Length: 524
Image 1 (cartoon, rainbow, N blue to C red):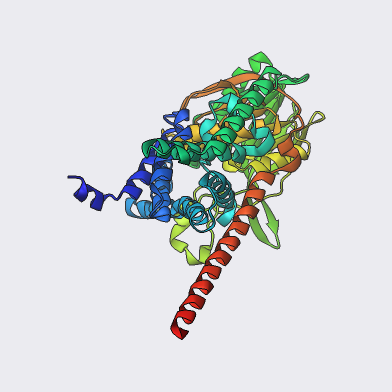
Image 2 (cartoon, rainbow, N blue to C red; image 1 turned 120 degrees about the vertical axis):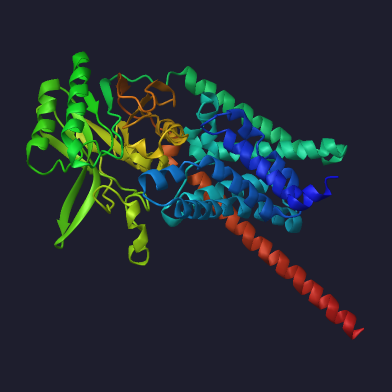
């Protein structure tokens, strides 16, 4: 009775789709964290016959569910019609799903032709391909597997050793071991029980949990020096931000909220990305109103504003942040380094003129140089918007002396979707990896203060006009990740390349042997 259903939805596609859905449910929202520990099991159980198709089906389902909010960005704020939005969305999903398909195919081929157990190959290949995805075509590491564990603080403490990739490695290993155990039990074949892999997985999980308890028990969030910090969440509608008719009301909103926050005498007030709907560098009344605010509050002010320079008679624009001292003097400007393709600039723009409508506000930006901002003997590392999902940027800021990471962002693009919560979840890992505090000011939310343990100490709501206040500690602690960086994914990538070469040579040798046998048979 199931034959028609199987022809319509083959077992490998069904298994992959089920795995992709379970994995997506482990991310914000609904944040069912535990599902990531078993979510890939249906894929690993059904991928033997068609490994690439199985993995691709899992990837399509996972990214389609996790990134559904892209259509909100493209239609509501990007100006694309629904047809073009869906087409672009499906193209991106298909591209991202390739990484899942290549991972399962590679692991299956290594097992089939070289006898390498998937419990060894899959975690390595998976991490290698996540690393490639984080850098290829400008990089898109959104929703790497390890981010699903942001709520389980005990587990994620190992991010200060191996980064986000270490957690993903562990999750894939556990899923692979569970899949082999389930298969052995189902087939009533005790001899196929992966005893060694099971012991290794249990030891790694126990070690991870023990290390997490050790770190959390030693008060990683405490610092000798602290700053009282106020995050101003203005909740400015994205459709009004660049409308000149609302410029004064937006400035007044941020000023009045900052004056309210000043009643508790903060050391630092932070506004979100592009909070000022004008060029702060240009003289005029808008600039004077912002510059006067620190003198009224007695606090330093960090805020996002577009900027520009002239280079070889060409005007170059930047997505920037400015820091003012309590006297209103400019202490420095930091420019965004990693831009959003099709959001802040258009790749291959001469070939894609119809995509111009996706770029709103002041037009195309150029990447700046990574430069911490000096403040009273300390340094601020400013991550603008989705720069917070790139661990190498945060690490570089801290290694250059940043005592506090500040993420200013405008998540109004995402609407009332899961994306703001996904963005917050990923930001937490930058604090853990570098054992440093992070202050996160978002236009529409979610604004938060995050401790070096990854604990969200205080946070605001979504689409609320509010002030998020609290103390942040200054200074970063030494970590293995800060010292070595992404040595784990680089190692996994190297092993994957070696494995593919080994696999190709093995197939070539078998083909040569078969040809030789055929020739001998003909001669006989």
